[in-house]
Image (cartoon, rainbow, N blue to C red; front, side):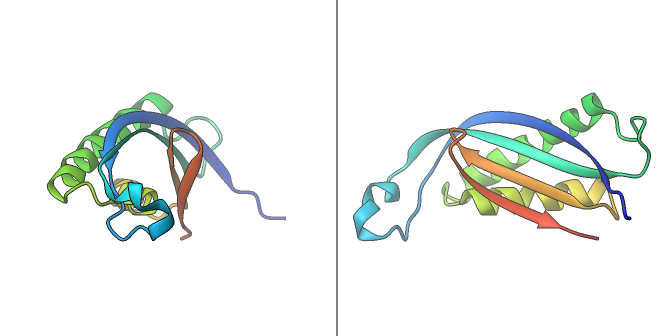
Length: 119
């Protein structure tokens, strides 16, 4: 039996985005609108005694979110939740190499985009 151990951290941030190619029935999404984005990250760890410390990992995640918010604004706020999750996963994997990573980004804790990378 194979065992995989993960840690999970969460964060949230307020920002705006839009869905430029929204279908007609939800065309209001083409306009810039506010959300409280919730981020949940699962990171694979090898040891079961804080190989990656929660507070340190959350600090790293906060930095990656600040970069995301800058790139989101520069890009015209066109990132979907899935795109944001992928962006954050790639940043996490650049520091925490050779680990499984799952990132979920939701709009207001309701609808989510999830990206998972398995090593």
